[in-house]
Length: 334
Ligand code: ISE
Image (cartoon, rainbow, N blue to C red):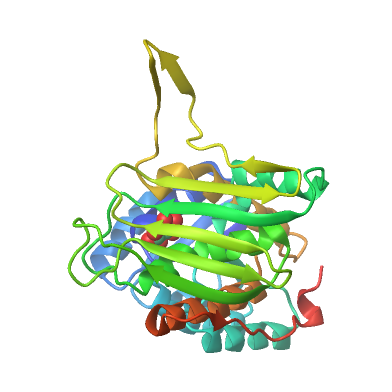
């Protein structure tokens, strides 16, 4: 039984506390922490664990063998570095840290510890549809992939959501998932600001058109539209030399009747990707017994941060920005 401490009791933190204590195997939530006492107590009430308002105290609790980090992104670097120093296993929600520099520090600390401790919560790698897409591509029956077209649409975002968050918070999923899907590193990033929707708040550029080029020359375009109004809409189509492969979307059945076609769409990411959150955490828990990490590593978190930095630069410059990354250390080779 893995005794886990959950850091952060917001929407996703509470969701993780529930799945860890009610649904997943071989795990128990021993403690939770949140900045406010009220929120920590609400989180603790969901699992019967101890409530902390200080993350460091939770990390140092001898009953806590591993931590799930679901606090806001800007807190991740500090918390993860402390957990590595305390020798705890870590599941860290995306982003691993908000800057590539901090991700690098985490990578270096993990390597220095000599143990594989960190999995990053890039949950799309565990989504059934994306897995099927990857299986199909890996067969290479369709020839080499040439282009990928994606959409990442959210029905609406809070006023606190900024133009840069379209990269750090939203596109970050495609940044990781498409790198995993193609097995390629990226060469450049470009952002095209299109005509703005009236439904975005004044400070936000929405939608945005993001273009990647990979090292082999493949081009990838992602429409990020976070006030699309009509639902949570994730699409991905890979165009290969001899055919295309497309994510089933929506994943619910399509009904044809009375000269109409209809189907149900997810209203938010928690519902759309529910099963992938279960699967990624179960994999992390199961791997703990063998002291390994099967899912996205701290290096993947670093690679995503470097790419995100190039996209933010491209938002500001309007130019095609190069993406340059260091060589992956042997520690992360599988
Ligand atoms: C959010 O943090 C997510 O992880 C969602 O998957 C994404 O669609 C959304 O735009 C982000 O804000």
